[in-house]
Length: 501
Ligand SMILES: Cc1cc2nc3c(=O)[nH]c(=O)nc-3n(C[C@H](O)[C@H](O)[C@H](O)COP(=O)(O)O)c2cc1C
Ligand SMILES: [Mn+2]
Image 1: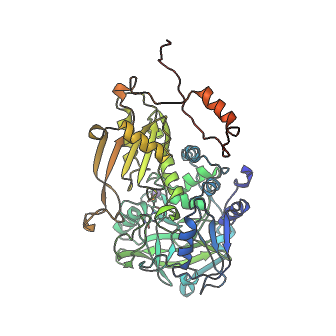
Image 2: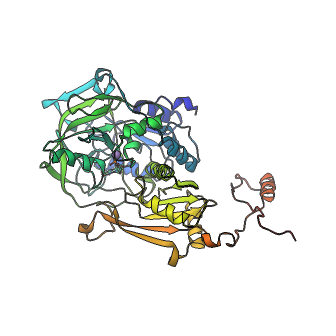
Image 3: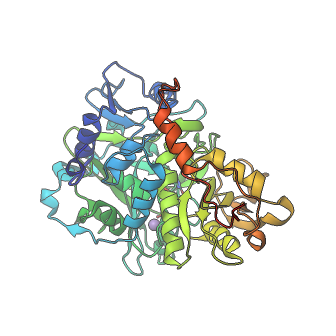
């Protein structure tokens, strides 16, 4: 695909066109039920790595409405389009590019509210009714239907006006009310408390259909004092277009599909959950959760709802893209702290998206590996939930779990190489912390799987091919009767330090 196709994407519609042009959009025209059928189809289709985004065009009880499931899923191509890059199979290379893009910030551009497509329809007062939009029930034991999952929830800090975008789920409570679940330490949780501490309701907007770039930015742990709009603009390469709402005073994305707006009050809660989570388990039991009293609903003509299925394995929307954005952010953070020698950062999607971080480094001094492990464990981009942090040498591909395991068992010494951090930032959703009352604290394990630095010069040599021999065998690969491509190998014997006989 020509890169010019992905530059200039402003809306979900633009993004869908690019995705459809590479054959990764499946339109489902058969009638399906919002009650567990859409999610079952998404779960089953998502088992195929790289499977398509699913646009449901015929939803029971919601004639004429459309909903997009598995927007990013496990497709590197769609992650590439989302970060405005050409599709590529090089996942680690893409994380590097994303981490470079995350170092740029571009302030949003204010446009006239009347020009914003999301204002094609504005319902206020008695006309507010979010039950007009399809909200799937995803898992059999879910406490309700979730309209906001692949979303951006927008709040502000009353102290300095910083606008935050966070991806937090929202359960439908009624025509004019949704649940607002953001976990402890998340920016919306802190923002709403700041308003309440001033005796005021917290203004909130929730975007239920959006350009997946805003979804990705909303789901990444950026610095708490900078708006995600600026980072999304940096990744986009041009400003995100917003308009100032006359209802909440918040800056809202002009090209969104659907935005609800209202206020959250400290004493207005409702039962919410349980919900089948990114861990592949139901999270915390249902419980009293803040709500948003909706004052206005803005939507384009024929809007599309964006939805994220949380599940085990590759069907988890909190999988590939979430882990790539986390890895990129950890890389940016390490670079920002001036840590040298970082060769790659990966967060295996197989580890519930955010459960593990792997950093490969070129060791340069005593203590370097331990320093990288501790910083990767606790930096803003990497601290939430992540349980295992593994540091490997530069000859190990962090995005290849087989390579990482091999390094762990051949280079780490369990008695010396493992550090445990206690009482760390986690979530009520971690099923391993019991009884649930001890949540949301977690713990972390840092594994130094690098060659012991003290002995690095005499560490057992890897058995590596000679480059000329590898290349000659590659040249003869089909003559030898192999049909597939020869395997790519990056490390070769360099005979350094070898004495000629
Ligand atoms: C699909 C998806 C759903 C998520 N749902 C929630 C949620 O319901 N509550 C929550 O606290 N975090 C949720 N997260 C994680 C947050 O979006 C993420 O931690 C993000 O950094 C929050 O924004 P903030 O750093 O501005 O607080 C979700 C992430 C994804 C990818
Ligand atoms: Mn934030």
